Structure formats: C-alpha cells, structure tokens
Image (cartoon, rainbow, N blue to C red; front, side, top):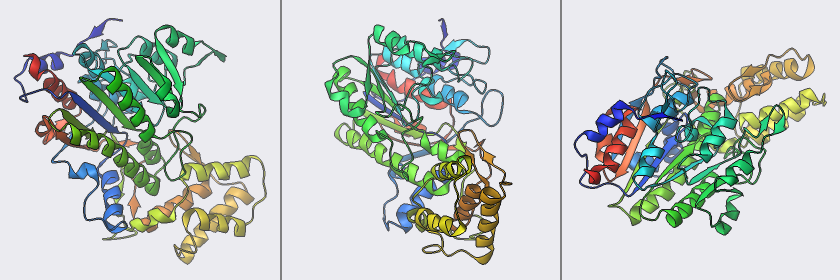
Length: 461
C-alpha cells in the first residue's frame, strides 16, 4: 500500500533542531478520553483522601500544555481521527484510521522512527486493533475493519504489540486463519504476560491470558487476566532486548474512555490513578536515563464532559466516595441484566443489600428520602413492571435502575457529566526529559508527533 508522508511533517523535519540531541528512548502515554476533569478527579482523591502533599505524577512533570482535538470533519473527534492525528501529524475524518480525508494512507511515527532505528512498541488495556494503537500501523477507511487492521500489523514495523484480544479473527462467522498468517510473517503470538520470558522472537503480539474479554477489566472490579502494568513490563523488557540503543513505546489507557462513556465518575478516577502507576514505571526508567529519555503524556480526546463539582455539591466535591464504590457501572449493569433476562426474582430489600456492598448506600453514604424514592421507583420499573427504559452508549447498555443508582452516586460525590460521548474540550499535555520544553504551550494534537519527530531527528541534521 502506497503511503503519503505528511507535507506538514516533512516541513517539520526540515525545520531547525529543537534540542541539542535526540532522545534515545521515547514514551508516548495516551490516556484515552482523559481530559482535565479526569486528571483533577484523580488528583483530588490523592490530596483529600490519601492526604498526600504531592500531586499525581503527571502533574509533577515540569512542562504542561494543552492540545485541541477536533477532526477534519467535526469539532468533536472520534478515537480513529484523534489517534491518526497523534500518530501521523495529519487530521482526518471520524472513523478513518491512518488515512487522509481523501483515503490515502499516511505514514506514522511508527514508520518514521523505525526507519531511524527505533524499536517500536505499542501497549493498551483494550484491544490491540482498537483505534489508538492501530493508528500507528494500520490504514483503513473504517476503524471497524479489524481483520484488515490485524493483517496490516503483520506488514508493519512494530516489534511489540499488546492488548486484550484481536477482534478480526472471523470472516462470515468462520475463523480466518489470522494467527497463522501473522506467524508466517515472523510474529510470535504470546498469551499472558507471564509467558513473555520464554519468547526469543524479534516481533511479538501479546494478548491477555483471558482471550474473551474486550478489555483488561476496570481497576475497581479487578483485572480479567493481565494488567496494563504487566503489559508495560513485558514491552519494556522486549524493547530493551531487541532495540537496546533506542526505542519508542506508546502506552494507551483505554479504560479511562470506557468509564467516561459510562459516566462512572469513581471508575474514571480509579483508572486514571492506575494509569498514573504505569506512568511511574516509565518515570523510573527516565530517572536511570535522564539525558536520553523523553516522556510525553496526553489524550486523544475528552470523554463525558467530566467536571469536578456539580450543582448538587456546590463549591465542594467528595472524593471519599471513591473508596465506597466496589463495582463499576458496567459490571453492576451486567448483574441487573442477568436478573432481567433470566427472569430471576429479587426483592427491594435484597437489592438494597447489594447497593450497600457495591456502592456504600444506606450505610457509609446516607441517601435522602427523595434519592431512596427515586431508586425504589426505578427498581419497580426495571424489575417488577418491566417498564424501565435502558440507556445505551458506545460500549454498554444500562437498565434504568443501574442508570439511576450511578447518577445518584455521581450527585453525592460531585462528579458532573455533559455527555455519554466525546466532547470537543482540549486535553492536557505533560512532558519531561529531552526536549520536553517544546510541549509547554497551546498545541493542536497534530503538533505533538511533529515535535517528537523533530526531536528524534535532531542528530540527523
């Protein structure tokens, strides 16, 4: 497939150097759906609940900026267009991946940096053929062309790709042989990060030990198999073995976006905190190689229009509710759907006990009479008269009772949302290391890969 090298990136590469030397090790952290509200929610928990004086790690980085995220055809981008911008320096239309708006394939950071001798690694806690990782190696007109995306990974220059599972394994309902096709191209398929130590291959596709789950599970629910931190450890070990002199590692926190679509404030905070823990692993590497490493943290877009504080809490917010919730909205919805679909009997008192254990209702969190009435009415419509209306988003559907319960949780904790989809809000940019000072200003998402490429080629000119 013929690829177009962006004229904008070509001009960037021809521009004057931004740093005295090129970073040998580049970490590109992309928190899917992670806007300023999501970051501040995690920081408020750290400060007010954990009583920590220091901010979360990304807020300690010496350089901070912001980036606009609009796509080529709308003020509110989807993940495919946003991932393409962050990977290729080019805007494209929503749903298009690694292609210009007129359907011409565009080279990515993965291509350019591999040509400069960097080993390329990509890891996510959702599917490795999802929009953000795929933007670094695939070129398709529709982000749902999963079989084509997987095949293009086989032809790419990526040495390490990790995620939950591939989705393009069947054609017309039958297995299409994609794993054998990838193996024929020299890619070793490893299931479970614990099995990575045995591999000797130069190129690896690491999948979750649980090959059914579409993501690795929300932190609040507990992982289903591996964690993003384990994928990071496996990836850094592989890149150090196969490309010890220089490498590029993109790490996506995909579950932040999933929880944002759910408008599940507590789960979002947990996901950002978990992502911050993975970022610390890269930071520890930086501390060992401070003159050779660059870390950039940003997001592809914001999801949910999340705010810290809403009209129910006035000039306050209560992150202690994070410790009271032990179940994501998605998992609680699955519990409710199981009752509905299998016609299982459940009483209001039994459901109240469930709410006590999962959300802290009635014990740790005292509901008002009106809130309890709202819950009871939603319970009756959902489980007794079956007149309740389901809510849907990109990844899940929620029975009315689950929607009301988690709306009340957000009201009490003070997490506000304007949408169940993406927004056009700008996203944060944080950086530390070689050339980090170049990210501390208002940017467009296409500027971020341009700066990375200019830094990477500083020693080439």
